[in-house]
Image 1 (cartoon, rainbow, N blue to C red):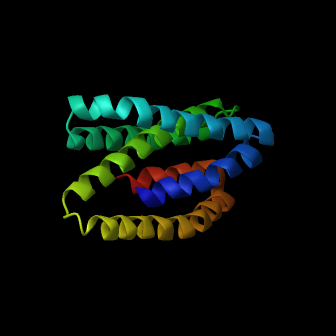
Image 2 (cartoon, one colour):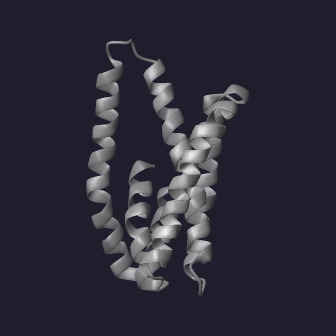
Amino acid sequence: TAAVASTYHSVAPIVLKDQFKIDPAAMGRAMAVQAIANAVVGGFALGPLTSRFSESAIIKTCLLAMSFGFLALTPAALQPTHIPWVAVGLVLSVFGHTMAVVLTSQSTTRVGPDEKGTLLGVEHGIFSGVRIGAPAVGVALFKAGGAVAVSVAWRCSRL
């Protein structure tokens, strides 16, 4: 999931600029909306959600929503406007961020106090490693076949 999300986030600005021809200000607004949505959900909705539902249920819901989101990217990439692509990206971002927070919460409760720092370091080291390689993969896919090639690859990775 981290590789797919990292590839999406690295290629999304290129898709918006090169395929949909939006200006940098509009691209910045689209990316800001994602960041704000993640902050709002993480800051205000995640607590009540984890109180009402199990962490496993939240993770399963996030995976399901992301699977449908990646399926929706291909038709979104074929639209004449960037709005569907940005909307799907927002869904992917919010559910992906929520899942990452809940997974970290789950993993840290399963180790002793002395191992929490090591676990978080290893987790974030893996995430960072994936984020280093994912942009190259995403850009290569985009060069090979545009946004459709990228969205099909993401969809296939979710199977």
